Image 1 (spheres, protein in one colour):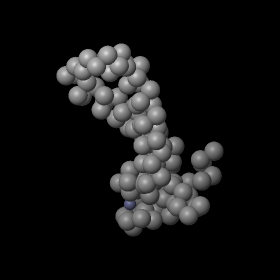
Image 2 (cartoon, protein in one colour):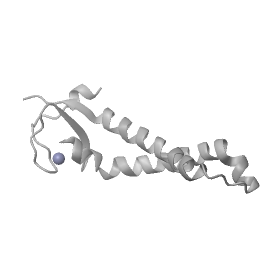
Image 3 (cartoon, helix red, strand yellow):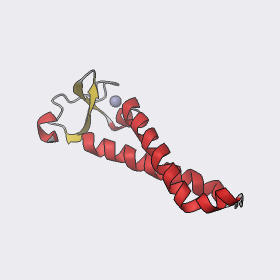
Image 4 (tube, helix red, strand yellow):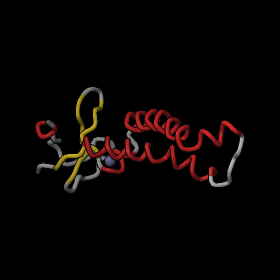
Length: 108
Ligand SMILES: [Zn+2]
């Protein structure tokens, strides 16, 4: 599906840097535009979607894994890192998935 949507230019539309081998075709004003990895990672629509996924999935996983402790008020010191990691993992997975979905090979 993405093969017809591969970027045709060899420079990033955001920063102008030359795209070596891979580009990330991200929707910019309704048009798929090539971005470098650095600009793609900072692309707000992907970050917004990842944040929504992070809040939904992180809350569900926290309820499953730590819900009994939270409901009983039995806070354990390990929760200081476990709960943030429970939210971080879905954020990273959603972001990487979005980037890989947009990735294509640059044609010169
Ligand atoms: Zn760029």
